[in-house]
Length: 196
Image 1: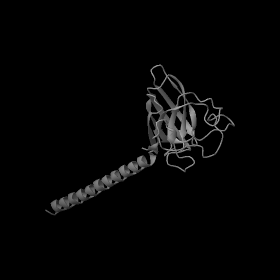
Image 2: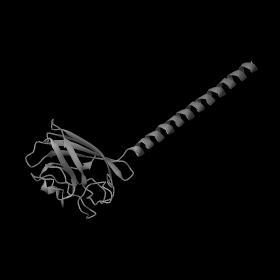
Image 3: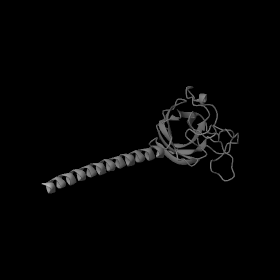
Image 4: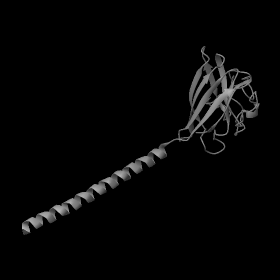
């Protein structure tokens, strides 16, 4: 009988130890899941978006996405539809306001450094913070552009933050020489950049 009592006591102790281990494993699993969720939250990059609408009587529209890469650069992904085939200048303008029919409410190029207009990434050249590039629109009236832009941020200091600016698509190509805006012509599309 004493032998059976010892077996029951031993079995009870083993069950308690087993339950304790299982709870400890569950707690560890919960901690690992929590750590993973925290890491994923920390890895999410700040983003912004602009829905581009027609201006100056054009039929174009589109969308621009901005992703802060966390290293002083922003990746711009742009899709345009309904535009006249050919090259069109693309700039960020200083005001997040597309209310005017010709998009003049967006103001001039975003230029916190008060530099001359020029070609972005040209060695030794001056360019506005809002100078981007030309986009090529195909025969089907669509165009795309992906570009990593140095000196921009999404939600950073005023001198780099794209939020609250407007993205403008012009009627002509930017010649990257003429002041103050590259002889790019009318503003045919405008979108206000907002946090996503």
